Image 1 (spheres, rainbow, N blue to C red):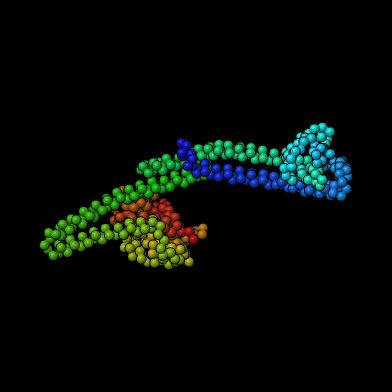
Image 2 (cartoon, rainbow, N blue to C red):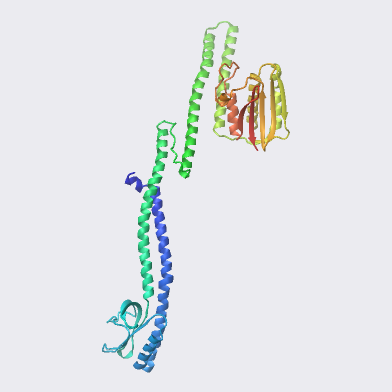
Length: 451
């Protein structure tokens, strides 16, 4: 797996996006924590210092320096929360009162936040504090502050967590992204290999399954089913092409022979006979192509003309149409049709499907046999059943007889081998299931329409 492919990987890009979102979420969370845990408390500290410094400045302005010093000492003695700090500097730079060891020598601004030493507890300690630097009348300078060591530690902890969290998120995210990219690319490469094999013409290739039944395995299984279906369709097309060539050879040969004889015939009666024979062969070819085109249109998924179909009436009409043919072959022709049967579909197509089934049953049933037509409800579905007492179809050939042009060995009944193919295509077009069963003796064909 080369670097260029990794960098172009969708998995890696999604990982980087996730990392950015995750880091942003962590930063937002720490930002909220900083505001609530550091910034707002600092604002409260500044407000307290502002109030204290205003009070002390007022004492100096109204009572003088000594009362201010006593007020500063009282402030330290009364402290219960944050340690209070102060420095009072005379005009010449002499320190008048202080509980700090160091402070800015030059006034650099009203508010100062810095770390300095203090002996407020009796020993020298380093503390972080917020201090207000004021200039008093008479050249005095007053620094008033409060200890913020806890806020400083909290702030350091937040920024440390942010820096470590961002760094670890980056490292772990990149590692995870590379691992996921490799895993996903490896699984996708199996699919690509199978696809390339199909492109090269090998329809037998399949996607190797991982065995975890995850999303990739389910996708691979679906692709394998699709490839199997495509392989079957291509094989079917190949068989159909061979069968078309085979089936066309005989009628085209006969048609050519008739036309050649016709071209040299002088007797009007012979011309009439040869012309009729040629027309019969042409009609046979036309009928074959029309059947093939209709099957192709049905398998192409066209669903024109759907409407409610009165199946009970349709079966009665089909029974009346084929009754004479059954009588000509001395066949028993019985029917049982439930009233009120209805499905949604193409009436003409369903009628042709039933007619093909009855025509096959009548042609393949020997004289003295029986054909039966049924229309019934079963489990919320409508079933059309055609059964006969003919030779039947062995179980291993029942899927083959649905293929175009397939005819059983030794079959001498006239036809193209397209009747059951059209029935199968029409059933698929209506979402119906088609079953060929043993009627003992004979064949039973069941078409089940969902309602």
